[in-house]
Image (cartoon, rainbow, N blue to C red):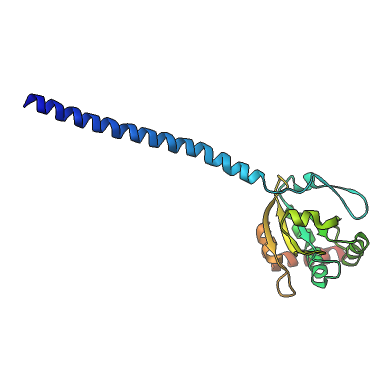
Length: 208
């Protein structure tokens, strides 16, 4: 009996040992996955396209994109085409609440398909400070998946992070939906009505 008992105990001990070994191997695999997966996620994240550190505006000046994006509050407004009336109105609407947007840290860059002289005309007609950048050959639009047609960029408002990559995007634009409210919400800048009231108050105070 003692021999059978000893054999049974050895089998149970062996089974427990094997189970313990399996648990240890599973925990080791889990720990390895915990280390590897974030690294893989970071690598995948780093593969996303980024805006160049500098660009050239329609007047030939250098736009320091890295500096504009340093606070994580760079807003890129894309124009569908130079002939797009809704795109022009978008800039006018943003200009009207620009003091409020700037008080919330927003910095802007306007990206359009060009040509440069027509973008300069838009800047003049809308009085939006820009800077305005021509996306020659739609190189940037193509990198970010924003090509709408061979000579058109998908209209959007893009939030750019400190790494110069797109952090969020509000795509689409129409006379019924400009995305102003979404922009203010993203910037934690208060409702549109409050933003316009602040601008109106500043305007009236300046006239006194």
